[in-house]
Length: 407
Picture 1 (cartoon, one colour):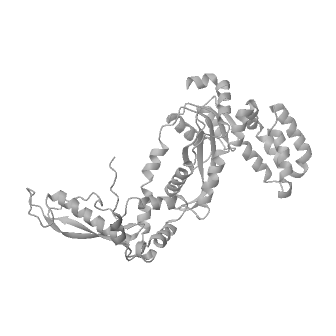
Picture 2 (spheres, one colour; picture 1 turned 90 degrees about the horizontal axis):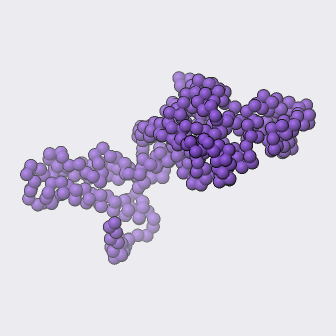
Picture 3 (cartoon, one colour; picture 1 turned 30 degrees about the horizontal axis):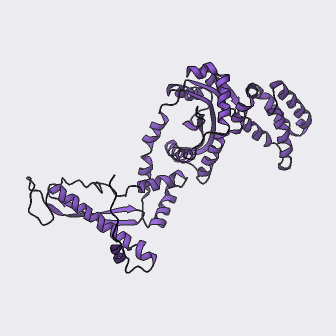
């Protein structure tokens, strides 16, 4: 690897001889901008000399007799604002600059700035205003849309990428957002997060439901199967209508577990703030039980104590009991992972933050672009296995030995 030569200190001293305030260096007409312009234009002249085979005022040496033919001006946008650059031309029109390719109007990395702002939930107008304020650069809404539209192919590739053959745990949940589809409609965006054998979280896919129910979920689960997921041990869900039937049709050995965290949170919606701590403690007695029989006994005690005040809570637990009790089939190591690793809820919280300032999305495509970019940002933080994963994996290996070996 070639190490770039250091810029001589005396040259820097000469350049900074008249430096008195920051604007002299990084202002609209500062040294940095002038230097960038001069260096880029000199580099382009060097590219032209290489293309033609002779210097600016040297004899023509190329067999075609091609020569310089003036310059055209292009304005580049970047972190320094707008920078006019003179691009040399040749008579035959065969010169293809490498430093600034034809049709390029933005420095490399400027698109990344737009995508970064978009992924944090800023609207097109907000991005336009931010770039003008920070860099003095006017960027049209069309340009911003063009840059973000470039993500669509990336989204499609991501949504169809191959997946691992086994995910011990898969969490499924949804977030509701408004989309202007002729009229403003509330749509459900479903998210699947898998925990792989290394204990790492992975977003498996993102789906916008046009309809809810078993048919939709069968399509989602079949897609996971077609992308390589051969087995799932436990699917944690939040009472998604039609999902248990769909997953049991495609993964007949998977256990469908209603998310305990969601059950507790839903229950506490019926409780005044000052009573929540007490009620939550009694609910914990249910799901912290050693066996399903003990849990049912604790539920009976809860009913006796709280039904007069908060009847819907026990009714909800009774109604969903068959999807709650699989939890008690597992040892503490696996229970802890199912319960405490509320992976998908933290993701949904982050997604809600970036959508709360938007009234609605103009289309499903715009929604998918934003969620995909936001999920990329969120998943960069997933650098470690989930908590207590080694203990859980040991128990998975014992409890599902034949299926682990097979995969």
